[in-house]
Length: 197
Image (cartoon, rainbow, N blue to C red; front, side, top):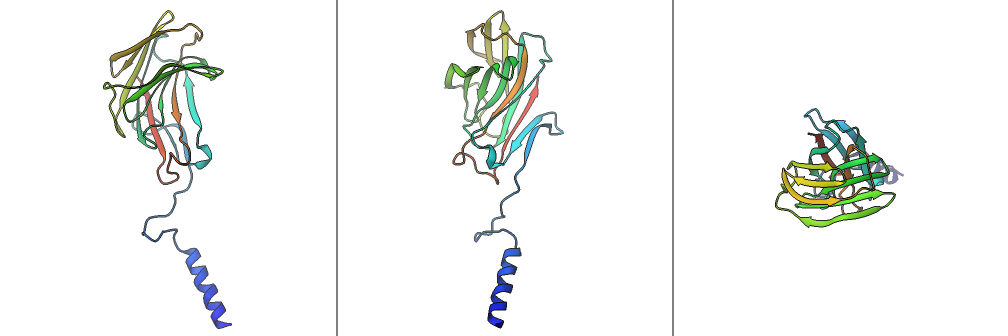
């Protein structure tokens, strides 16, 4: 009987200890998501380590503070999968009709249109104009002239396209979350910061 009580007591002590593994690493962090809130340093933050949002994309669309023909933001990714895209929504009518200029931390960019389904305007391509790595800011800008869009990365023109199927003037932010294999939740969150320029 004493032996059984001792085993139960040891089991309870082990269960109540911190969630450290055999290597001494700290246990898992609690799940949390920050949806488009000020980070106190002039940026809007989106951050999550919640495994329930694997393979999701998040958008935040708002009125363009610039005139109706210039769309410009600054963005940076502090953590998360290096190849999962983030960037700017532009020319948006609403949440179902918009263009997007997206980048990753390895120096690639792409341009898409969403109008009830995604259509590629510019396939993923590497650009020397992008700053690479975590915490590195990039300025994304698109100037609209009638139905022609001129795309700039860090003030260097990289592409131009013509399309008249979407006629909005709203701007926004975009973040894509990777799969369970691509992200390391909860200990390494996706953390992306934005600000309109």
